[in-house]
Image (cartoon, rainbow, N blue to C red; front, side, top):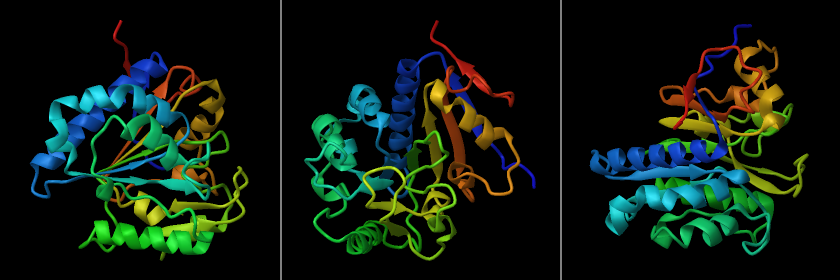
Length: 258
Protein backbone atom coordinates (compact mmCIF):
# COMPACT_ATOMS: atom_id res chain seq x y z
CA UNK A 1 0.00 0.00 0.00
CA UNK A 2 1.44 3.37 -1.00
CA UNK A 3 1.98 5.95 1.69
CA UNK A 4 -0.46 8.86 1.40
CA UNK A 5 0.88 12.22 0.32
CA UNK A 6 2.20 13.79 3.53
CA UNK A 7 1.21 17.33 2.58
CA UNK A 8 3.35 20.40 3.11
CA UNK A 9 5.48 20.13 6.26
CA UNK A 10 6.76 23.23 8.06
CA UNK A 11 9.11 22.86 11.03
CA UNK A 12 9.67 25.67 13.52
CA UNK A 13 12.42 26.10 16.06
CA UNK A 14 9.94 26.49 18.95
CA UNK A 15 6.22 26.25 19.73
CA UNK A 16 6.23 30.04 20.11
CA UNK A 17 7.44 30.57 16.54
CA UNK A 18 4.99 27.96 15.32
CA UNK A 19 2.11 29.72 17.10
CA UNK A 20 3.00 33.11 15.65
CA UNK A 21 3.18 31.70 12.11
CA UNK A 22 -0.07 29.78 12.57
CA UNK A 23 -1.87 32.93 13.72
CA UNK A 24 -0.56 34.88 10.73
CA UNK A 25 -1.74 32.13 8.38
CA UNK A 26 -5.22 32.18 9.96
CA UNK A 27 -5.35 35.98 9.60
CA UNK A 28 -4.25 35.86 5.96
CA UNK A 29 -6.67 33.08 5.07
CA UNK A 30 -9.50 34.94 6.80
CA UNK A 31 -8.74 38.17 4.95
CA UNK A 32 -8.71 36.37 1.57
CA UNK A 33 -11.97 34.55 2.27
CA UNK A 34 -13.81 37.64 3.56
CA UNK A 35 -12.66 39.60 0.50
CA UNK A 36 -13.69 36.76 -1.83
CA UNK A 37 -16.96 35.88 -3.49
CA UNK A 38 -18.43 34.13 -0.43
CA UNK A 39 -17.44 37.00 1.90
CA UNK A 40 -17.09 34.53 4.77
CA UNK A 41 -14.38 32.70 6.66
CA UNK A 42 -15.33 29.33 8.17
CA UNK A 43 -12.83 28.10 10.77
CA UNK A 44 -12.86 24.84 12.73
CA UNK A 45 -10.81 24.63 15.91
CA UNK A 46 -9.50 21.75 18.01
CA UNK A 47 -8.74 21.79 21.72
CA UNK A 48 -5.76 20.81 23.84
CA UNK A 49 -2.61 22.92 23.62
CA UNK A 50 -4.03 24.77 20.61
CA UNK A 51 -6.26 26.82 22.92
CA UNK A 52 -3.42 28.56 24.72
CA UNK A 53 -1.38 28.87 21.52
CA UNK A 54 -4.18 30.62 19.63
CA UNK A 55 -5.25 32.69 22.63
CA UNK A 56 -1.71 34.02 22.86
CA UNK A 57 -1.15 34.79 19.17
CA UNK A 58 -4.41 35.13 17.24
CA UNK A 59 -5.94 38.35 18.67
CA UNK A 60 -2.98 40.50 17.60
CA UNK A 61 -2.74 38.77 14.22
CA UNK A 62 -6.36 39.49 13.29
CA UNK A 63 -6.54 42.93 14.96
CA UNK A 64 -5.95 44.81 11.66
CA UNK A 65 -9.18 43.31 10.27
CA UNK A 66 -11.15 44.86 13.13
CA UNK A 67 -14.67 43.92 14.23
CA UNK A 68 -15.96 44.38 10.68
CA UNK A 69 -13.74 41.55 9.45
CA UNK A 70 -14.56 39.24 12.35
CA UNK A 71 -18.27 39.77 11.70
CA UNK A 72 -17.80 37.55 8.64
CA UNK A 73 -16.26 34.65 10.55
CA UNK A 74 -18.08 31.38 11.26
CA UNK A 75 -16.45 29.35 14.01
CA UNK A 76 -17.00 25.66 14.74
CA UNK A 77 -15.25 22.98 16.75
CA UNK A 78 -13.73 19.81 15.33
CA UNK A 79 -14.78 17.80 18.35
CA UNK A 80 -16.15 18.45 21.80
CA UNK A 81 -16.39 16.70 25.13
CA UNK A 82 -19.92 16.25 26.48
CA UNK A 83 -19.36 18.27 29.64
CA UNK A 84 -20.76 21.63 30.81
CA UNK A 85 -19.08 24.67 29.25
CA UNK A 86 -17.76 25.61 32.68
CA UNK A 87 -15.92 22.27 32.96
CA UNK A 88 -12.13 22.27 32.50
CA UNK A 89 -12.49 19.67 29.69
CA UNK A 90 -14.89 21.78 27.57
CA UNK A 91 -13.15 22.89 24.38
CA UNK A 92 -15.73 25.60 23.72
CA UNK A 93 -15.58 26.69 27.35
CA UNK A 94 -11.80 27.10 27.19
CA UNK A 95 -11.95 29.06 23.95
CA UNK A 96 -14.77 31.22 25.31
CA UNK A 97 -12.66 32.13 28.33
CA UNK A 98 -9.25 32.51 26.73
CA UNK A 99 -9.82 33.51 23.08
CA UNK A 100 -13.37 34.55 22.28
CA UNK A 101 -13.27 37.11 25.09
CA UNK A 102 -10.63 38.87 22.94
CA UNK A 103 -12.25 38.35 19.51
CA UNK A 104 -15.59 40.04 18.76
CA UNK A 105 -17.00 37.20 16.65
CA UNK A 106 -20.83 37.41 16.85
CA UNK A 107 -22.20 34.76 19.21
CA UNK A 108 -24.65 33.66 16.51
CA UNK A 109 -21.68 32.66 14.32
CA UNK A 110 -19.98 30.51 16.95
CA UNK A 111 -21.37 26.98 16.55
CA UNK A 112 -21.17 24.84 19.69
CA UNK A 113 -22.82 21.69 20.98
CA UNK A 114 -25.62 21.65 23.53
CA UNK A 115 -23.91 19.78 26.38
CA UNK A 116 -27.21 19.23 28.21
CA UNK A 117 -28.43 16.75 25.58
CA UNK A 118 -27.64 13.01 25.55
CA UNK A 119 -24.62 12.34 23.35
CA UNK A 120 -26.57 11.00 20.34
CA UNK A 121 -28.92 13.99 20.38
CA UNK A 122 -26.02 16.38 20.94
CA UNK A 123 -24.39 15.07 17.77
CA UNK A 124 -27.61 15.41 15.77
CA UNK A 125 -28.17 18.92 17.12
CA UNK A 126 -24.62 20.01 16.25
CA UNK A 127 -24.96 18.55 12.75
CA UNK A 128 -28.22 20.49 12.28
CA UNK A 129 -26.50 23.72 13.37
CA UNK A 130 -23.66 23.09 10.93
CA UNK A 131 -26.06 22.41 8.06
CA UNK A 132 -27.83 25.70 8.81
CA UNK A 133 -24.51 27.55 8.85
CA UNK A 134 -23.30 25.87 5.65
CA UNK A 135 -26.48 26.05 3.58
CA UNK A 136 -25.80 24.99 0.01
CA UNK A 137 -23.05 22.54 0.99
CA UNK A 138 -24.03 18.86 0.99
CA UNK A 139 -21.13 18.43 3.40
CA UNK A 140 -19.94 21.49 5.38
CA UNK A 141 -16.85 22.91 3.69
CA UNK A 142 -14.60 24.72 6.16
CA UNK A 143 -12.08 27.19 4.78
CA UNK A 144 -9.61 26.10 7.45
CA UNK A 145 -9.54 23.27 9.98
CA UNK A 146 -6.83 23.27 12.65
CA UNK A 147 -6.31 19.76 13.97
CA UNK A 148 -4.15 18.19 16.64
CA UNK A 149 -2.79 14.67 16.73
CA UNK A 150 -2.42 12.44 19.78
CA UNK A 151 0.54 10.16 20.56
CA UNK A 152 -1.72 7.28 19.45
CA UNK A 153 -2.46 8.95 16.10
CA UNK A 154 -5.99 10.07 16.93
CA UNK A 155 -7.36 13.37 15.66
CA UNK A 156 -10.62 15.04 16.65
CA UNK A 157 -12.30 12.20 18.56
CA UNK A 158 -11.46 9.66 15.87
CA UNK A 159 -9.39 6.95 17.53
CA UNK A 160 -7.35 4.06 16.08
CA UNK A 161 -9.38 1.00 15.06
CA UNK A 162 -12.65 2.69 16.07
CA UNK A 163 -15.79 2.04 13.97
CA UNK A 164 -16.24 5.81 13.45
CA UNK A 165 -13.33 5.71 11.00
CA UNK A 166 -15.73 3.93 8.62
CA UNK A 167 -18.50 6.54 8.98
CA UNK A 168 -19.44 7.95 5.58
CA UNK A 169 -23.00 9.26 6.03
CA UNK A 170 -23.00 11.39 9.17
CA UNK A 171 -21.16 14.72 9.28
CA UNK A 172 -21.09 14.64 13.09
CA UNK A 173 -20.92 11.47 15.14
CA UNK A 174 -21.39 10.69 18.84
CA UNK A 175 -18.84 8.61 20.70
CA UNK A 176 -19.57 7.06 24.10
CA UNK A 177 -16.48 4.89 24.47
CA UNK A 178 -13.60 7.30 23.93
CA UNK A 179 -10.36 5.62 25.08
CA UNK A 180 -9.33 9.06 26.33
CA UNK A 181 -11.54 10.57 29.05
CA UNK A 182 -14.12 11.97 29.17
CA UNK A 183 -15.73 9.03 27.32
CA UNK A 184 -18.71 10.89 25.80
CA UNK A 185 -17.86 13.19 22.92
CA UNK A 186 -19.13 14.64 19.66
CA UNK A 187 -16.81 14.72 16.64
CA UNK A 188 -16.66 15.78 13.02
CA UNK A 189 -16.28 12.77 10.74
CA UNK A 190 -13.71 12.08 8.04
CA UNK A 191 -16.02 13.23 5.19
CA UNK A 192 -16.09 16.72 6.73
CA UNK A 193 -12.36 16.79 7.45
CA UNK A 194 -11.61 15.76 3.87
CA UNK A 195 -14.00 18.32 2.39
CA UNK A 196 -12.10 21.27 3.90
CA UNK A 197 -10.29 23.79 1.71
CA UNK A 198 -7.26 23.74 4.01
CA UNK A 199 -6.34 21.44 6.90
CA UNK A 200 -3.43 22.24 9.21
CA UNK A 201 -2.19 19.69 11.71
CA UNK A 202 -0.28 21.16 14.64
CA UNK A 203 2.02 18.99 16.76
CA UNK A 204 4.71 19.95 19.23
CA UNK A 205 7.00 18.10 21.60
CA UNK A 206 9.14 14.98 21.55
CA UNK A 207 6.18 12.85 22.60
CA UNK A 208 4.68 13.24 19.10
CA UNK A 209 7.86 12.34 17.17
CA UNK A 210 7.29 8.59 16.83
CA UNK A 211 3.67 8.82 15.74
CA UNK A 212 4.44 11.59 13.24
CA UNK A 213 7.03 9.36 11.60
CA UNK A 214 4.38 6.63 11.29
CA UNK A 215 1.79 9.02 9.86
CA UNK A 216 4.04 10.87 7.44
CA UNK A 217 6.45 8.15 6.32
CA UNK A 218 5.21 4.62 6.97
CA UNK A 219 3.06 2.54 4.65
CA UNK A 220 0.55 0.95 7.01
CA UNK A 221 -2.23 -1.40 5.97
CA UNK A 222 -4.50 0.19 8.59
CA UNK A 223 -3.47 3.86 8.65
CA UNK A 224 -3.83 5.84 11.85
CA UNK A 225 -6.78 8.26 11.99
CA UNK A 226 -4.65 11.35 11.33
CA UNK A 227 -3.21 9.66 8.22
CA UNK A 228 -6.76 9.28 6.84
CA UNK A 229 -7.13 13.06 6.66
CA UNK A 230 -6.39 13.68 2.97
CA UNK A 231 -8.49 16.61 1.69
CA UNK A 232 -10.07 15.73 -1.67
CA UNK A 233 -9.41 19.08 -3.31
CA UNK A 234 -8.00 21.08 -0.40
CA UNK A 235 -4.52 21.67 0.94
CA UNK A 236 -2.91 19.66 3.75
CA UNK A 237 -0.22 21.24 5.93
CA UNK A 238 1.72 20.13 8.98
CA UNK A 239 3.08 22.69 11.48
CA UNK A 240 5.61 20.99 13.75
CA UNK A 241 8.30 22.10 16.15
CA UNK A 242 11.80 20.63 15.97
CA UNK A 243 11.17 18.20 18.82
CA UNK A 244 8.11 16.71 17.12
CA UNK A 245 9.88 16.51 13.74
CA UNK A 246 13.14 15.03 14.98
CA UNK A 247 12.60 11.54 13.49
CA UNK A 248 11.37 12.65 10.05
CA UNK A 249 13.38 11.93 6.93
CA UNK A 250 10.82 13.25 4.41
CA UNK A 251 11.51 16.75 3.03
CA UNK A 252 10.25 19.67 5.07
CA UNK A 253 10.66 23.42 5.17
CA UNK A 254 12.56 24.79 8.15
CA UNK A 255 11.44 28.11 9.60
CA UNK A 256 13.32 30.29 12.04
CA UNK A 257 13.25 33.95 12.95
CA UNK A 258 16.88 33.76 14.06
